[in-house]
Length: 450
Image 1 (cartoon, helix red, strand yellow):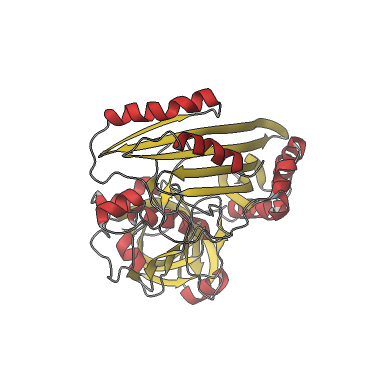
Image 2 (image 1 turned 135 degrees about the horizontal axis):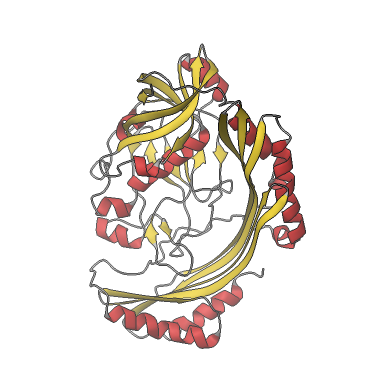
């Protein structure tokens, strides 16, 4: 995949047709994606797709219009600007509408592109998925099935050019292996999963992904429902990553301006334990979602959201920033050229502590390790912060993992859970999502079982 210069040339040609008094934004993108899924020693599915196209936003007065096309042909691109203008005429007036403007923040020098990934033959990708399935099955005799064994990769390049002075180019590659398996003992069956992520094949560890999936499944065999009560819980890194995604949603400028965040009026207040420092940092090359620029072309930057328990800021795109009387934090997110931007977190992580999970378990003594949750997003009220979700895990007894537990509910509120954080682990794990995982100790959580 070539660098983005040819894409920028296409964007410039559209921008050149802008009229006086209107703002025009052009996003041009090109991507490739491969997904291979193995099942029962065969290739269950193989998808290899290429996607390219452009999206155009036009802002005229207090109205915005948008149009996109999945083609880079000159004839098609030539019609996009006119179509966006037509759409603007029918848009609902919005006094805050407008494009991003350069803010002087330098674009980070991130090395996110590995051309070697583009040269990997499809046959090798198929082999990796099949090898992963075999590796999971071979880890333990109690593994009786592999629900999925996948290899996924992607590469993309994008440019954003606007009449307000934004000129942004970026490109990246990514890949991961994932497995989900079944472990059986008698008439009981449990599931487990494992991942390995990177930007090229050499970053992936197939054996680690297989071992993790098998371990997560087999350690839950023999599970029982726990007694109900208030206990200290340790969240597995994967669970913490999911929780951070929910918390990040409440810290979005979009949620705040709509009055749908329990933290909307709490800037500068203590909203968490002093052990909690939550950062959104898409400039961290370890983040799966790292990028040089946001969806509006502004430079990515590190944004501390909560520092030692104090809420410092929300994340904004240019629109929510104007509504809130502040500046964009470089947090415009969009699903590619076919969508308009909105404010959202891009690469969340907690500042890690000094202890790994075994050390945290020893310090807790008695409690519950929550290894997975069910329906987390549907179990959280993003307005009130009320939290209730199904879970499974293991009892913590005398500082070690003991009896596996199933079919229990974890309940609290986001606000209380943040305040009740007792320790943050050192075991940071970047997963194929927009948040990093880490073991997290939270006291006084309601667990409802038998």
